[in-house]
Image (cartoon, rainbow, N blue to C red; front, side, top):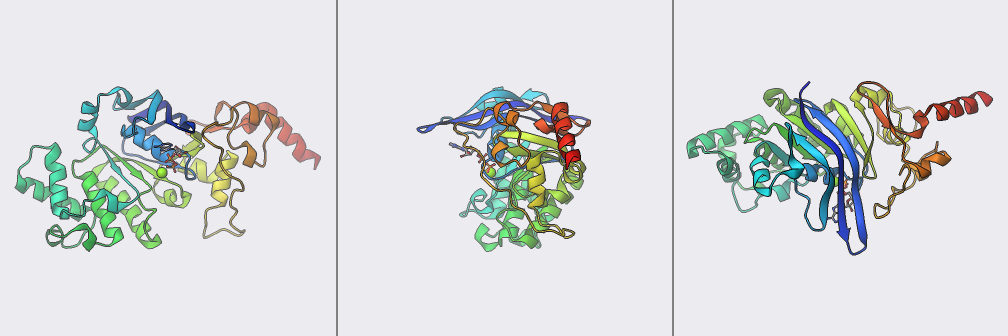
Length: 334
Ligand SMILES: Nc1ncnc2c1ncn2[C@@H]1O[C@H](COP(=O)(O)OP(=O)(O)O)[C@@H](O)[C@H]1O
Ligand SMILES: [Mg+2]
């Protein structure tokens, strides 16, 4: 399978008056062409910083990509000039943000915004641009697109606005779409419709998608693979099947227990405690203080990644053979 994106050992820091925030601490993952990778984790774990780093939208100062490579079709985005990056942004890679209102200009009709978005990057006539805008509005399911093009963002509902934002992101036919919590601001029913829309778009265009969310429920339908983030690190990654049916990191298990499920018998269990302060992240596994299985070593040393299968990787000391023996003995003693 062709890798469209390959991120290795990405570190992002923010220097503030209070000290240096280590927002992303050695993140590695890849995305195959045409697939959807979901990056999941609690608020503040570094999801947006990771996606902004790929787009090179980390404000600097205070932010900085302090280490790592971001290979997009073999080219390291972390090393590109701002000029070269500008030619990629919105054209080869597009991003959709959480709040559809801030992504649209309230003073311009949506037709103008779509057409300008295309003309900014491609040498097309007005008529061609208009044609393409109509095609995009059709694709994202806006009824009467020719009429609606003449209207302003406030004349649309939240869900319709997010559809328009998606159309603006797609108009230059990007190969990679990064959607950062694209449904968080929407009602549950509208959320489901937007998620279905992503599926349809991928079917029609073949675009590769990174879907960022704090809600595992959202990814259940859409993702091919899932990367679980905690305190600036990816602590487990696998196919949707690996993560939902064979989660191995106690944090992933905790996340799954806190997702409402139709077949759930027991109560939802939130994970007690809070993530660590990223000003001085712990040397060991950052989940240790909240982990029901924590051992002494967990606090001191960060675990190596264990490869459970070709698709499934987890960073947890419980995977160490010595820990496995320990766990087995404890269980048999009971
Ligand atoms: N501009 C900034 N200045 C300082 N810290 C920041 C900045 N942007 C993000 N951070 C910090 O980086 C960490 C990760 O944030 P973020 O990626 O936005 O989390 P989320 O997973 O919710 O998207 C947080 O601790 C956040 O406070
Ligand atoms: Mg975020």
